[in-house]
Amino acid sequence: MIVTGRSRTPDGHWWYECEAILPSRHQHPDGHAEPKSAPTAISVAAEDITPIPGESYTAVPTAGAVAGRQWLAVRMRGTGDAEPWWCVHRRDCWQARDGWLTRRVTAQEAVELLARTAEARVCDICRPDRVLDRPGR
Image (cartoon, rainbow, N blue to C red; front, side, top):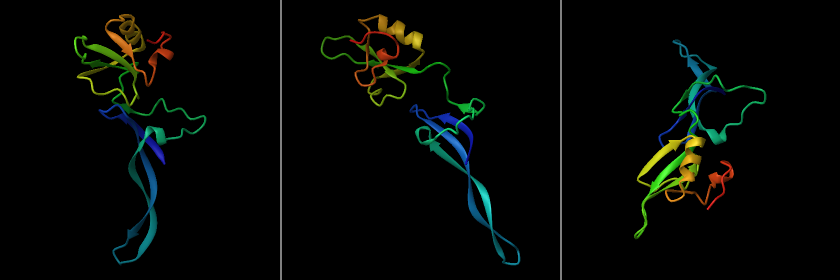
């Protein structure tokens, strides 16, 4: 199998576009068939790909990436008298949903957002504050 590209779907998940060499057959005009092989396009979830040691994947064409934007800020509705607030998540956090607005942000933007304590909180599940060098709340 060879990697031909990678892409991010709108839900934020990464996929590798690959070609697997699969067995096939070639049917000759006289009816004689012989075994062959053919490249077949497949998509594989990024978490199911194991990189080959020593290989660089930096030249693999990438679609859907937003450079440096590894974090999600999700706008949450306040309950009762509470004002709406931002919840900061790791990009792959399963809890990053149910808000009415989601933005991809850089690490610097995430730190600046979290510095405004009345407007933002960290996700209790993925705890981005542990990586962003910022105490959690």
